[in-house]
Amino acid sequence: MCGIVGFTHFKEPLNDGILTRAQRALLHRGPDQQGQFTSGQISLAATRLKILDMEAGDQPLFSQNSDLVLIFNGEIFNHRELRKRLEAAGRIFLTTCDSEVVLHAYQVWGNQCFARLRGMFAIAIWSQSECRLTLARDCMGIKPLYYYLHHDEIFFGSELKALFVHPRVSRRIDLPALNCYLSMNYVPGLRTLVEGISKLSPGHFLEWQNGRVSTKRFSHPNLGVQPPPTLSAACETLDELLSSSVSEQLVSDAPVGMWLSGGVDSSTLVHYAAMKARGPLQTFSITFQGRSFDDGVYIRAVSEHFGTHHHEIDLHPSQELPRTIEEMAYYSDEPSADAGAVPVWFLSKITREKVAVALSGDGADELFGGYLTYNADRYYQTNQAPPALAPADGLPWSAEDSCF
Image (cartoon, rainbow, N blue to C red; front, side, top):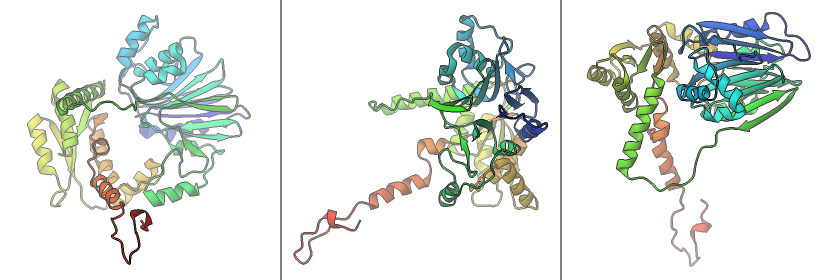
């Protein structure tokens, strides 16, 4: 996880210290390396968590003619494949970092390069010769990217707190967004709880030039109807997809671990990771000893089966909880209605003591319909159908006459 932030300042120079304070607000995202770029038109800063190429790949990254400046948050899983294609086209690489692949891809394919990137990313590229800023966000919106427009200037960053450093950025509450949060426990779409600050839409890139802004979608998923596969064919395809996905995300020059809950999701990922790993995996868990929802017995069974180096912490009410919630509020930027974030906070802390990267099973319930609420929704839809009404008092009642 890295952090990026930037401010244009065509009409008035940026005050000393603003960029450094904005960068400092993102240090928790990138403790390993920090860098800045400032010109008469724009100021950029990055904080880097080193995952690939520990010795090189510092940011900001410059093109060989120094015209393009890149800051990058994320990971490109197919960077090796793209590197081979770019080298075949004559591009010369100085690092093994995926961020340099992004820069060369942009030089060769322009904005069409974003559709070729398979991964999670928030990207900012500044062209000095054209005074043009390009922002891009991965098609699933995994990496955050906020922006704010003010009098033809644009300010952007990985977190709201980095934008708040700039005195021109509004801090007014967006009341419609607050209404959404109080109704649904989250703010949907591109809004935030701060008036005027938006999220860049997933699968889109934004171009800013001379105060003019345009956005365009680069991700176009194929949603065409196809004949359903047989069960055996579907199982085989799922096996191949999970195997390749886990394999791609294990590529790292930093230590990688696995979050293990004892459930089907995380246990499945540990299965695939154990097949690919060169040595014993490191797994990390939260337990709730003595409570009905404790899955410690399943966690340890999976760990023993795959021979992992296991680390766990038992979570219980303590004096640390109020301070923890305060810290979570700061790092979350916007309120979180997910009570599960508290154990994840403690799990992240023990994980970071051993590894820099961790894979988890989050998201599987959304993809495979694993939540009980999905069944409830099905029953709700069924019960919305009006019942058949028998004629009464000689009147020809029908379903259309029902108050439903």
